[in-house]
Length: 331
Ligand code: TYM
Figure 1 (tube, protein in one colour):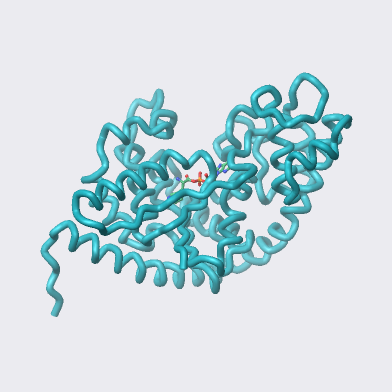
Figure 2 (cartoon, rainbow, N blue to C red; figure 1 turned 60 degrees about the horizontal axis):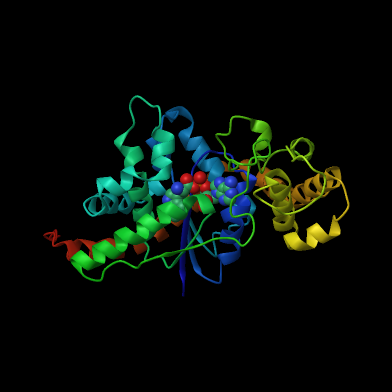
């Protein structure tokens, strides 16, 4: 069976980009693949964060994933820091990855820019991500477009490791959605939708009430001109709404272009708002139930960590052997 692995940061909130770019496919892969999903709390520590809220944000993110449709009987859902193998493998891979390739990573350059002191963890972020993936003999990694470079690094490191120490690690491939691989900010459609956006109006959160979703979509920045046409370079705002509309309804962008031919931008916005509200309604309902029972979420995560650990422990055993470490004799 194909092994699928992916991860998400514990922001405690999830936006439509996360959902359409990645999480919706995580839900779809369950059952058809051996699916392993992780809330990556260790990655959240690479920039300044609030330790008082990390645990709660991690739990909320897991609850959101369950509300989105992850089913613990058909996938493995766990928290990164609960499985020590991730940090152990990170060290081994640190000795294979190079400073040069990490320094050139776009995310490192963007997040580190202008900061007086940048943590070594931020530089090492992609190696921890490679360890996440490689610790599970992963075949496929469903991610959005913004994680493409990190996935390439994981592949490069795996190939180099195998070349140096013998065939040990499975070289994974990324999978990307045909539409909405990069959902853009509604207020600034040349930047990706993100939790850290300057304007909260530009980001559609999965738990935004229907009226808020509708208001944000109605005030989306559109382009000069008036035709509803898919042309990401010339009409990024309209094209982004068309992609969201297509992805939310399961119909192609071309289909919607034809349907809205000769109509106004307002009609495009109304259709998009309606589709997004409808798409998220069942998720919002399920979240309300899960949020009322944090103990249940914690139990699901504990069982997930045990399952994940048993897989990762086997891979790490192989890795230690390949590296030539002296085995620890027990008993
Ligand atoms: P994160 O938490 O930023 O995002 C989670 C997933 O959502 C996708 N995504 C988007 N897709 C489309 N449009 C957008 N605007 C958008 N914003 C985010 C991301 O591509 C991602 O798939 N480094 C990762 C987490 C991670 C990981 C891993 C992923 C850690 N270890 C191992 C895969 C495998 C991250 O920060 O994702």
